[in-house]
Image (tube, rainbow, N blue to C red; front, side, top):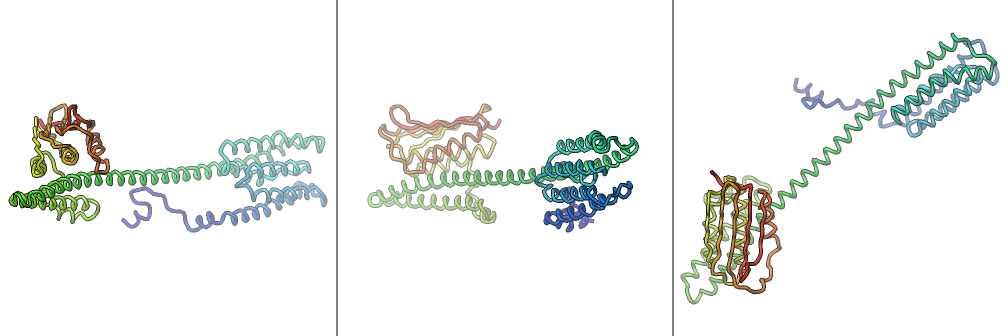
Length: 421
């Protein structure tokens, strides 16, 4: 049962693919045109010969030759019915008028094929216009031609039978054309829609990939900039204390190694998110959270204090309940303090104020570094951008700028990062 369900499209309700014969005809349209022309030549020639014989008006000369010439011209016009359906219709109409001048009946096969081509290769409106012209040709034009050529029209019975036959054949062709054209347009619409959806899917996948890469780059920037800045500061301090205070020098070196190991672990986590999940699981240790939050702020500040930064933390209110919001706040504080370590001139006080409540969360990082021209940037300019992006994730804004009298201040408001009740 499952196998048959798969063959019939399964739960997706997909149609069966075209069979071998249909695929062959679609792949060889020229062969189809040749077969249609040959079939019409046979049928049209038979009509041109049998019609005068059945009416008792057979003449060995010109009249039936005119009908044959019309058949040949119409057959030639059928070869371009796909690209020029109106040309095919015009040639078939002219051939029909020429046939009427000899007293023969209109060939319904030519008109049927011409009207079918209008429906399929042009539009439904063009097809009905052609059908109306065919009906007018049989109802209005033919009696007028009969009067002009023979001096009197055919009997009303003959005209009725001929007109009914002619209209019926063309109407059947019109209905077939409507069905085929509707199916083609429907399939074309489905194909176009499928292509559009596939394109949108690829675009969404590309956007998601770029967003993921941007997030990973932002995390790597925060980890590396913080760790390297602290490690450089500790290395400089250890070098300065190597002779004067060997004990403090050893402590600085041990702290340097600890920060380096922690940074390697965090880098393994980030790189593991790009591929092997087992690698990320192995990198996660009991002392390292893959998404550090408010609880890890004490450890973060300890690393900066080890680099001789006089930083103080002031937390007011319960922290946000969302781990993502906590991680965003952690990274904002980490990046801001890293910039203080890089650029502040001998700061004596560095404060981190974290306020949370039902209206959201705000964090302010301020230092009182000495006034003067700002030190030349040693980063890539992504620090403040990353802070603004993290704040924007929770409907917030970020402001950063110098403090009058010296120092720097970063203030972030995150209205959608609410504290736990």
